[in-house]
Length: 388
Image 1 (cartoon, rainbow, N blue to C red):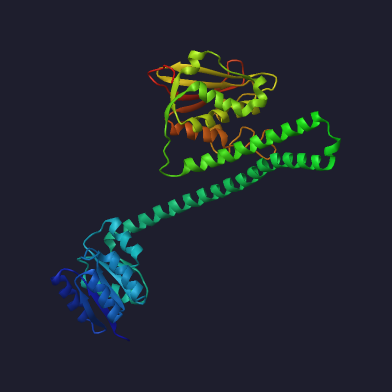
Image 2 (cartoon, rainbow, N blue to C red):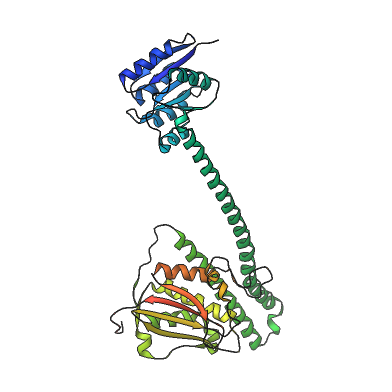
C-alpha cells in the first residue's frame, strides 16, 4: 500500500509536534510538512501536494476556512480534515462548506485520528461524535428550508405564468382597439362621418389612457420593489391630489361626485404628489370599473385625529368581508380567472397599498353607505391646516 502523505497545520507548537509524532508512528503514513498558520499551510500544500491535510480551524492568517479553500484550489487531490477545539454549529458548517471531508474535535483519541486520516484518503467523511447530532439537526433544517423554497419557487412560477397570461390580455385589448381604428380609417376613412371619427378617436384615447395607466402601474411597482427606495413627502393640498387623479377620467366626469368645500380641499397632507395621485387614481379606476354605471362614484374627505381620509365609494356588487384583505395582494381580483368579467392586472390595489405604506399611511376597504364598496386612503395630515 502507498504511503499516506500528511500535512499538519496547527498554530500551537506542542500540539503540532504531538500530531506529527502520532502520524509518523504509523508505518503507512508520512508527515511531509507542518505549518503554523494559513499562509504556511497553503504554501506547503502547493509545494508538497499531500494526500491529507489536518487543518486547525482557528489558526492565524485567515484560519481554517481560508486555508481549506485555497489548499483545495491549489491541490484538488488533497483531502482536508478540520481540527478544532470548537464544537459550535457555525464553526462546523463553515468548515464543511469550505470543503473538509472530516471534522475532529481536539482531544479525539489517537486511534480515531489515524482512522479518520485513512477514511479521508478513501473519500469517506468523518465527524467527531460530539458534533454529529448538531450536523444532522442542521441538515434536517436545511432539508425543511429547501422544501419550503421549492414550494415558493413553484408558486412564483405559477404567478409568473398568470402574470404573462393576464398581461398579454390587458395589452392586447387596448392595442386591438387602436389597430381597429387605424384599419377603419385606412379602409373607410373617406366614408366616415365626423361623428364616427370622433367616436373612434374617443375609443383610441380611452385605450391609450388605459395603456399609460397599465405601464405606469408596472413601472411604479418595480421601483417600489427596489431596496433602498425612499418616498420623499412634502405638504400637499388634498384638493390638488383629487384634481390631478380625477383628471385621468375626463370622459367619466358625469359619474364622479367630488367635494366642493374649498376649506376641506385646502387641508394638507404629507405626500409624494405623483405617487399619492397614482394611488388615488387606482382607487378611482377600480370604482369606475366595478361600480354600477347607473350610479355615481363618490369621493369624500374627512379629518380624523391628525389624519386625513379620502374615501371613494361605488354602488357596485360589493366585496365579501372574507376577501377584503385579499384584494390588496398582487394579481388578485374578486372575480379572478380567465373568464373574469372585469379587466385589470390585479396589481392596482396592491400598488396603492405599497404607495400608502411607503407614505406611512393606510388603505382599507369596507361597505359603502349606500351599498357597494368604499376604499379609504388615510394620510398623515398637517397640524397647521392653512392652505399652502
